[in-house]
Length: 212
Image (cartoon, rainbow, N blue to C red; front, side, top):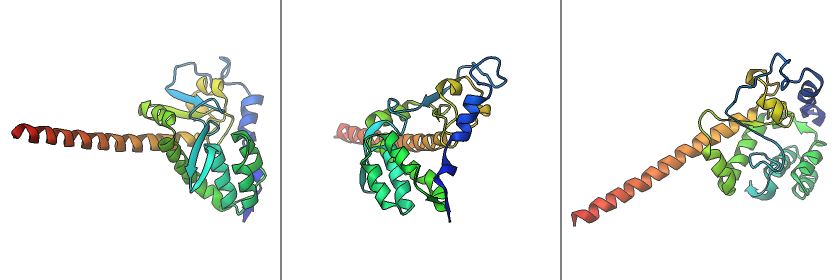
């Protein structure tokens, strides 16, 4: 069973953000100017964004952005190897997404996409130092928010709308935050465990030397 690619687009959120009361205006009931501990990102200039140009190797294939990797994976898991090849060679992440929008995706993909995204972002964490640094510097209360009118991965709003709208009123599910937060906590624990192991080894060697 397959679903048309058009069913997976972000038009509902974009319509909400553009045609109804705009949350960033004080007259809107959902307006909230309180400072929030969030990192809103979108586009190729933000390191947290999948559109940020970077070299990633995942599932044995090299890509020039996380978006290339994700859309390539979608094409392959939809059985469209020709489109997958075109996506891999796309000049930009935006081009990769546009090409992939024509794919007819199976229902199974909807069950797999979150895990695929998680694996891609874990690879980005391990292979792109500036992304790793950004993720590790955030505290437990930080929210990562894709702000590109995406009602599944992000807030469903743009950056200003995201910052000035109560988080409970965001039209988007912000699934990306759940994934990045899980990665951040998992990697931070691994880093601390590894660091503590090295420190313990150094202390042991230090004490051993001073016994002689």
